[in-house]
Image (cartoon, rainbow, N blue to C red):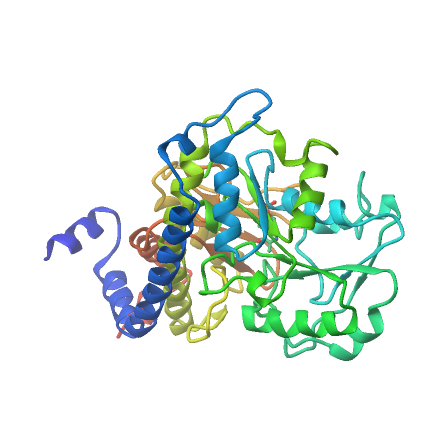
Length: 432
Ligand SMILES: *Cc1c(COP(=O)(O)O)cnc(C)c1O
């Protein structure tokens, strides 16, 4: 037995699972090479942006108190603006998460009487309360900002006719979610986003187009501002934080949009001038530096999981051979036991809390029990190997992340091993 087989076996991976995994991987070589190419391009893009902004050792120091003249913070914002092809950016630890960044972008650019449009269907769950689709304190609805939604057509394409009808004199901002999030519609490519924004701007040239970029960063060579987006928004504990950023969010966009967001985050008049970076700038820089290859590892993991479980007869979204535009992989097991075993396997593969057994629980805001697997260095980080699934039909899990491809590979094999150990899948299905 080879050394590598031995160490896999010592971590609980049977030779059948290992052989099955290797068999699936043989068919993925060409796709992996393409992912590596994209990572190479994006790695150089990040280095170029850091060099052009003259990132120096002094940038890694950070400030306390008011945070006036925070060289590292201001330079990092220049780097983000360069990478995302925008005029300016706001990148702050004071932006607590992706939802906060999105709420900030929306609330800062909308005024009472304005209307918000989602031309891509229902937005991410947490935005329902931000917008006021579900009543919540401080929602946009409470401030007299109305909302209109145009769903995607059954085949996932834009409903241009309905979008045309929906845009009116009050339509101020269109929110476009790049990733499918935890839905089953397709994720939008940057090309598709370009088509949509071109259409919207033709209907109404001054409409602000905001893209929820969560989980999409560095998956392609271009980012949504290159497709005409006025604002691009995301979380630092997903792709662009590279697993090292301990907190934070970003809004990159037109100067005016970023200024609005800064005035709302801090205060009118103070805008970007305050906001101490404390001690975390090294991890924000270094995480961004690693983000292209970390994202590539997560993408390989998603494709490996799709290929493996598709081959075993389970429905997967996206399908194994489909082009990728984000790092999320859905797998439908069709039974609670399948969802639970998968999450147990992912947890058992973690570097942190591997000895913990995840259990379904009544999570606030959900109408069924949810099981989650996360043994992350940064709490709740979903660029790290993680999975979750609501315990309700069709019994699907959503899987993402992996700071390294090797970890993602191990985690997926561990999940398969657990499905076998829990007798959700019989061993004979692995016969090659
Ligand atoms: C994760 C995510 C969000 C919200 O980010 P949080 O950091 O969890 O608040 C919003 N939109 C999409 C598409 C996401 O994937």
